[in-house]
Length: 313
Image 1 (cartoon, rainbow, N blue to C red):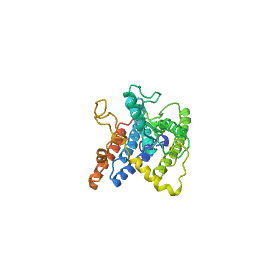
Image 2 (image 1 turned 30 degrees about the vertical axis):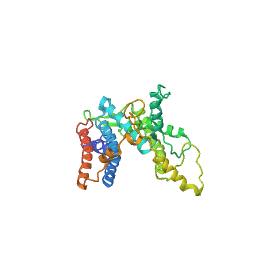
Image 3 (image 1 turned 90 degrees about the horizontal axis):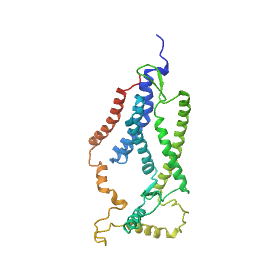
């Protein structure tokens, strides 16, 4: 009996390629579960674990059943998974945007006075680029964001192998399009993903430096040199300014209304309720481990379902 060529090997297409695709996502998923167990905090570790689980399930269904990539459900899940990754990049990994409370307050009062609010293309956007920045130009952040946004979609497609072994015919079938074009596009996509990860790391490293730095690095302007003897007085003044939070307007306002419809950045998401949902310190080790095992079971269970309904040999 002739040996089966490697490219038509059942073992290759059913186990080895899926394992190579899922193993990086699986191990990052498990790392986040371990961090959740050690810190006894659900957020942000389970949120990050969900990001890897969602990307893995989209990839595994696209790998085991290539025809599903034309289905609206798979396309929707693909966009949701990618947009969730972009959201995580911007708000969690980079801390790129911060709540523009002054702008929201201005728009509220201006609209109440009949002024119509602030004009412009992004008048509705309540966020602004964070004030603490290490790089001197704002365009650097916007450029990295746009490139990362576009290449995130390309990176998701690189998780799906370019060919698969058809279960019905036993032939090698191209996943996307013409093999010559696919080879060129696949090489370009892999190079683009390396480039995306490089520029992603620039903002990730910058944000880690800012979070661990005791004083602001830059705020979009030139740094201010502070005399050595005035450091303590300046820090005390900054602490006093930080403690002065805007208060919600009571019902004694002139318009006779009750509490305003907007809240401060600290009030929008009450720390007590979110903290109680995230905190796992009241659970013992067995309870925490059982919850995390449920997450791992969901991850592997969906992958098994995809494999059971596979269209590849």
